Length: 77
Image (cartoon, rainbow, N blue to C red; front, side):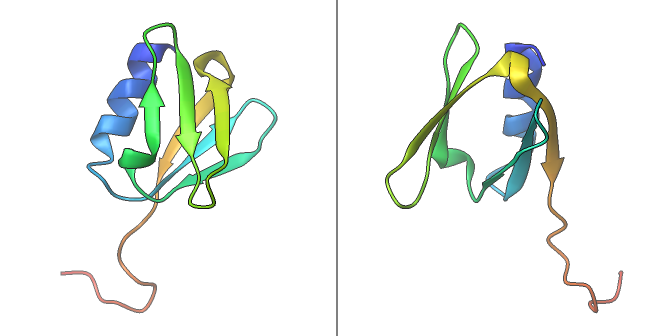
């Protein structure tokens, strides 16, 4: 995914949790956009709650999946 598309998708999350899927199928669960930094050259830095740092090249990001904030048994309005 291009750095521009990664940035647009992450900004669309609006601070809500989402999942980044990489080219090897691995999910990266992102609780909040404050835990990510996207560099100009397309590197994504993810800061985990335990202090770990994960670097991902945007070329290896295949999707950004937004989690449904509505609980399973909660009725639709």
